[in-house]
Length: 129
Image (cartoon, rainbow, N blue to C red; front, side, top):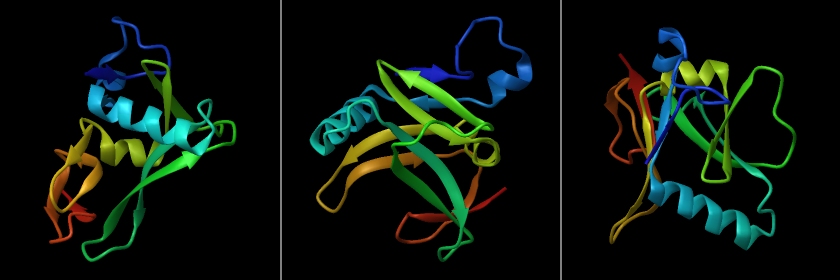
């Protein structure tokens, strides 16, 4: 499991930057690597974010990112796989863990977000604290 707080994770990161971190599990990294390889774009990144909408107010965004990161994006790298997060989304995702989950009913990425106050029954939208 990797915890990343900056593009170039360093132990001496300021306290504010340490708070703006996302943990990405080994399972999530491997799943991302498989999806990128299957798509034929292993050099692309995975964009993580949130957007307004859904039953509860916000929805998670997980998408392939073929373009170069935008100026205000944060780029995290985990075992050679790049994850891109815009700064506004990072505020709501700070402290979250991105995991891979496989159950009888669901297979894919799953956020475990301490900033969620409530989530809907489908598990794809949420409200924040």
